[in-house]
Length: 226
Image 1 (cartoon, rainbow, N blue to C red):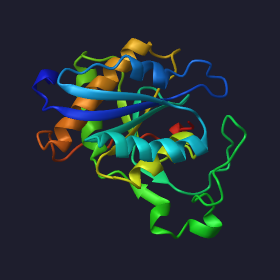
Image 2 (cartoon, rainbow, N blue to C red; image 1 turned 90 degrees about the vertical axis):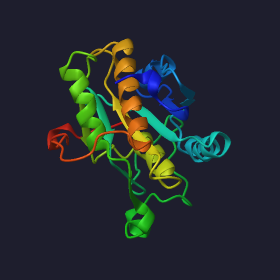
Image 3 (tube, rainbow, N blue to C red; image 1 turned 45 degrees about the vertical axis):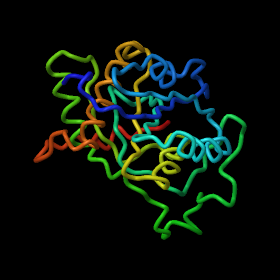
């Protein structure tokens, strides 16, 4: 896959700031190093705060009008790249770094919103295809990280951000969980992200592969938390 052959595209890629025991967040460290020839990359660090997500995500869409929005976050369960499929808009009961939960005017409780059409959003990008292509690069030795998909993004800031972007454009939004630095170096994670982004751009451009693919879903035991 020749990255230099990609059409000129603008991609916004975000990582998160510090939280809990992550004094250095691997998602942002990996995003900072991203470089793909022929692609305009806009990199942004998002604090682990619900109200900041409410403000920043719409601004990123409005100001940059990206061809693709990719949010990245760390998961201690991830054994490689994990491409998320679904973002829920309810049941966010874990406090952010400021000790806050989503504001009451946001979708955050199944009591009021679980039946709402916007309470569960799915990316329209075929992440199974991306998973398949990234794993071919992994098996061929091009990158060090394997890939999987997931339908449980953790109901914390990662999934909250994913849902926020999906509500803006479900056909241009992807969330990728990355592993901790104890499993792979930042440089190895960055290289795998570059490969995934390249695959994603080829797919939305119509030049990626389609057809029958192996199932890449993570097992029930690999549910992720942000």
